[in-house]
Image (tube, rainbow, N blue to C red; front, side, top):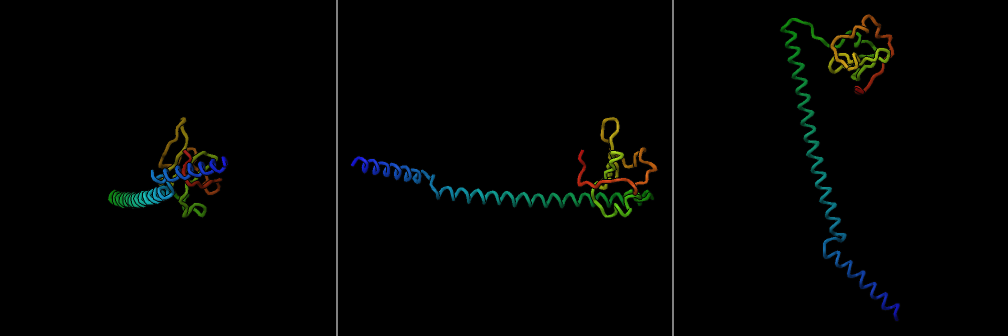
Length: 153
């Protein structure tokens, strides 16, 4: 008889706490609703971010296209030659490549986006539009080079 009373008391206690949790809004239905709200909110934020990113990328593209047009116009007015890449960049190994070119022997990078060289001088990285003096007269077509997605500086 004592065992039956203990089982009934335990069952009543469990049912009471379960009903109390449901009454306070901590039951299964509440968690499902919160999860749906979170997913909906997250999707809304993600959509807003991609809309912003698309707009930002479009603005960057417009800026660089405008800058390039203005530079070409300026060069034409001054009767200078348009400075594209150096002549060696149009060889078979480099043509139609958009990665950075690294010359390990000289510890120098060629940046095709800024059309210049990045190298180490006096404990600092230096950018110059002209080829460094220590690379003048070198047959670049025969050098060991590496193509890199970005500068590791």
